[in-house]
Amino acid sequence: MTIHKSKGLEFPVVIFPYADLDIYRELEPKEWFPINKETYNGFSHTLLNFNKDFENFGESGLEIFNNHKSEQELDNINLLYVTLTRAVEQLYIISTNETPSKGEITSKKYSGLFINYLQHIGDWNDSQTNYSFGLSEKTSQSKIPSRENTIQQEFISTSKETHNINVITKSGLLWDTTQKEAIEKGNLLHNIMSKIKTKDDIDFVMNDFINDSTINIDQAEPLKKMVIELVNHPELETFYNTNDTVYNERDIITKEGLILRPDRVVVNIKNEAVIIDYKTGAEDKKHAQQLQLYQDILQDMKITVKKKILVYMNDDILVKEV
Image 1 (tube, rainbow, N blue to C red):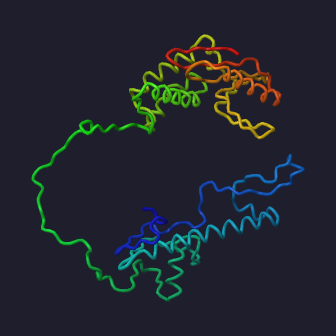
Image 2 (tube, rainbow, N blue to C red; image 1 turned 60 degrees about the vertical axis):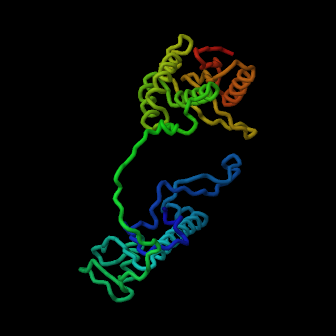
Image 3 (cartoon, rainbow, N blue to C red; image 1 turned 90 degrees about the vertical axis):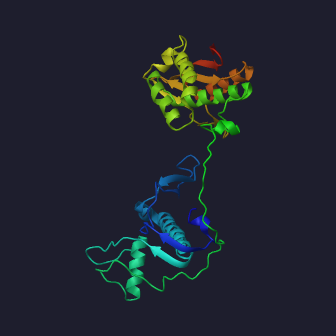
């Protein structure tokens, strides 16, 4: 259980280890900062990394800084309150003695709050590391009825296959029907190709998919074979063995607010692009229309589209320029 999930629950004994959390420590915090719409093409806010510099960003920055810090304090003090109020009989807190050389105790950490409390009640001693309050005797009665001890005489183990249990590496990736196999295989190939910029990436990407259990070794072999066939295809090879800029699965926002995501766009130093889109299943005129939409938005961005290519990844690789 997490501490938040234990709200409303009580336990006879609670042990709180590592009770030295830094109240203000965050991983890559962000904050929205207001900006001038006229100066920044109609944008009213920009997302910035949150740090102490916000204090110097005028009144708005100072207000954001103070609110952010207040929310951190409130959230972490609430967290501490929940932790310290779950025990019915005994609470053990394991913290650190972080007394600075100047003797000033910081309130940035839980450990500092505990020391401040001990100072407040007059019990703090620099050389003392253990403090106890109240009585530690057990007062509650066990809710589990007593039973006579029994010894297990025999252990029986049966394989998961006996119970028709299948362990799969990822939900939905058990290829047990023809239709499902085709869908999942197509999704996997899309995901793998989204990570590959050049043919040198193939082994690294396949190992990544195996290591994070997205696919197993048996699945990896036919998938890798198809990827190699794709990147070495005579009509595609040049686009997977290039120093040009490659954009895989990048969102493009149109002026109308529509979000488009081409599978692969290769742009050379002349600002000329080749669009590649991967498909599975039967050919459809909508696929060509989709590539035309990609071309229109790229040309609005002053990028010249030299080629549009559809790659159908079924039993064989079919390349079609549109």
